[in-house]
Length: 307
Image 1 (cartoon, one colour):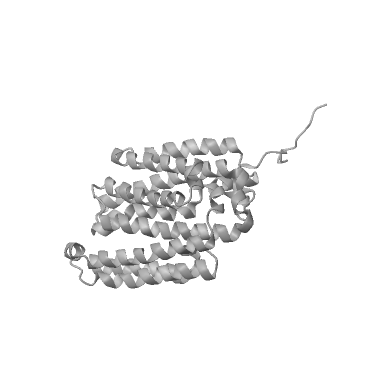
Image 2 (cartoon, one colour):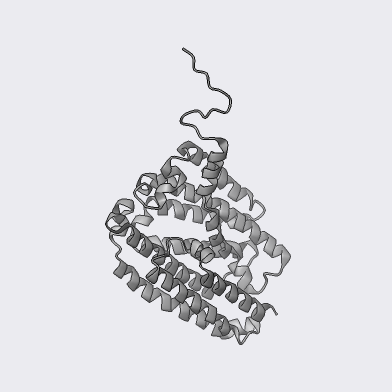
């Protein structure tokens, strides 16, 4: 007995190309590409962001890290699909919900990984940072994210690698101030994310990720209370450092700290009073005061350093 399927009829078990495309795009998490703007840090803080050739090279690094980070997200979602089904939000991710077939996700990982290196084929000096970032995230997905403290350290190191990659592309070595500030700020954001996960999952936190059984709100808050003042003080010392002032001829650079302090205060308010923080990029996009603090900092920094 033959089965006839009319034109336009949906075959059971298969998704339309449009739905598959939407599922892949969602899995790539394009909003999270904002994190890759850290590759511009070395260029921005060197005072050379207006050099068109250098800006073009770092833009390629940005695209490269965006492709590789999306591959990482797909790999993470594949590995965590069973646990994600126990999460109130992550259960709707394409792989966990069954919208994106695993074989297609694996193929996408291969394409994105290859693309990330092809984009910077003219900048082989960046390949080491890309390899380190990829290896770090594989280790994070398989082991490190289940190790208390090391999990947030791994996230912070990922941001530092972005900074190094952007600097390598244009022959700029990031300063110790930039590396320290990047690492500390990333810790604040990573701990805020852990706090959100502990609050959201509550007793079921360990079933989603074993390390969450090791964290409590009190523990995370204590860690945040240590890292946050270090972040603020380090940035203030950077703006007041004689070398920094001499390099930029900017004795009033410390004024930019107003926006840094406000931004951090706003972030702390959002994670403590609004119980947010699961995605720092979403906070930046959707919280107007936080977004304005970042914009205000950029405008003030550019005005003082570049004009």
